[in-house]
Length: 599
Image 1 (cartoon, rainbow, N blue to C red):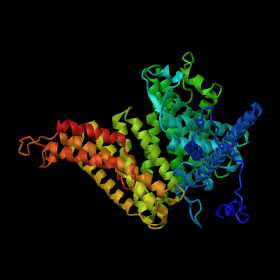
Image 2: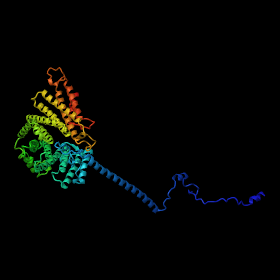
Image 3: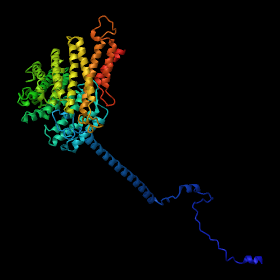
Image 4: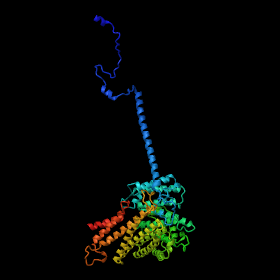
């Protein structure tokens, strides 16, 4: 019964289903698994391998296409980034770095013309960075020149033509070499754009290029700067001649006087370069430089007494020989005139008609006239433009320095008259100092030149040997006190005009000029300290020495000298808070003297 029950089919039980299972991993005939189970789990879903060469090619091309897309997108991204960076850099330089300080509302060009004391980049007189008239390419080159001057580093060797005239392997700053090239190309493009030689934009660019050539400071670059300033002088002189009033107190006359002073300075340096190899050419450079300086001084003084001098400044006698000289030069290129050893100038027609002493005598008479009229309610000073005053005094100092190489007695008398002239100018400027920030800065500028004149007089009297040592020391101490007092007054100047910003454009309109004046005052104080230090070093160390001079004081000579030299180092280093420029020459001089004392 039991068995029969089991034999009956179990209709209620679900039949077992069977599935056709295809193994995921193939096995060999001996039963070994060909693929690792764990490896298969870790690898996840895999793309089946291509069945033939066509499938393999598709996969390869797909991979190459992906790489190309990545490269293209990366290149486009880098290009866009570079373009944005390039445009952004040029916009920054154009609108932040190049423009001069904002003069402010209601302030226009005035007789002080402090804005002319800072160099522009083709549109500084407009209050802009670069002039739109010269085109985008020239403007880009000018900005690139600024970038090279301020951010470029490194050294470059002299050119092959310069190495022929130099025995050493001197290097020049590559930043200025690059800037020179770009500015030259920008000037060429500006001339092609139709700018005339007397255009203020072109003159500003030429002045900038000449300054760069001066900083390179090779014989060839100095002569290039000389030729540029000569072109500027001729262009500005022609503009003053076309004006009905002779160009008095116009920017063309200011630029002509400034260019004449620079031509005098550069000509004397070129004469020093030429003297060892060609005495005749060196003498020509010297005589021409003297005439430029005399022209600048004479016409600067004539603007103050223009009521009795109605003729145009371009028609006076010192100008004509210079114009004839430059017309003779224009027939040859500047490099041929300098380097062609077969072409030598034997005469200087018109330039040696009178000796330098005769011209100096006429200037001395005019300086005496100004000094005597200082108390007559201003005298000639009432019509003496402040900017012309500064330009004339700068030329006077340049000529005085040159006279030392000709005759020491003449140089001493000339510098004494300059000192009296400065004293009269200070008296008049002191009465106007409270009128405006420009007048304050003018007064401090005159005080700085008065201190420098005292240092020069001390050195001349020491070299002459006819003045008592006590008078020499007192003169130099007075110069040091004047410089210290002017530095304190300059640091105490407050107001929006003297605010020092992070960039040129964000600074006050007189901030850059006051910084330059501070550097000049530091240099004057360092010169005075070094001179007093060397005088003190000649004193005996024993205060009880029998023949000890009275001017030596009670301190030992070495101690007093050391204090003065340390003071000179302080002036030369400046202040780290205001990022003052280090004055290399007085620093080296003071360091060498201190090393001798401590040895």
